[in-house]
Length: 264
Image (cartoon, rainbow, N blue to C red; front, side):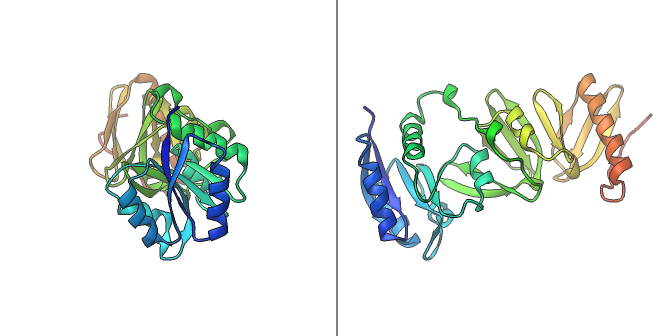
């Protein structure tokens, strides 16, 4: 049996005690420490270097995101919150586990199973998109990069590319973010428009287009970051042309996109 070392970080002593009692039913979990503030959590995570942390969102001295921002080593995170409106959509999109208070034993067991199997194989990718709520354009998505977590505004995404069961989102600053989500899962939840799926491996955000070039049946797109371009095949080019035509007719004043090199 694979064992994992975990820390419980919550500002409520009774909540920490309840979590410890619930985890006692899982012999594969060893609780190596507790923390009640952001400062304490940072210290114990740095000192103990656990495999995972059950992390409250709101704590004295900041938030759970503040705890993670200064860590130097990667670890798995299960966010724990009493506020189901607080970035739940953001947690779901990047396969980050979260638990709502009061803690449900069945959901806790599922989270523990995921923690112990996290690195077993790529085929174990979570994909909860079918039962998850749709995104609003002003939503954020939670990005996990090594030990750091940050919230990425959905409207800041220029494009999403598929890599098997993974996807890569490129933002307006030309940064890339890897997600354990399929392109179909993304598209089932994205607002359309401004997002449009052009082919099996690419979704774009039309709001962040700055221009395009037509080359026969192919299209080269430019985005507001000035660096990102795509060359589309025939079928995707037709979808792109239709999207641009529909968008310009519907929201021309709000989306001043400039075609460059349009010979048609």
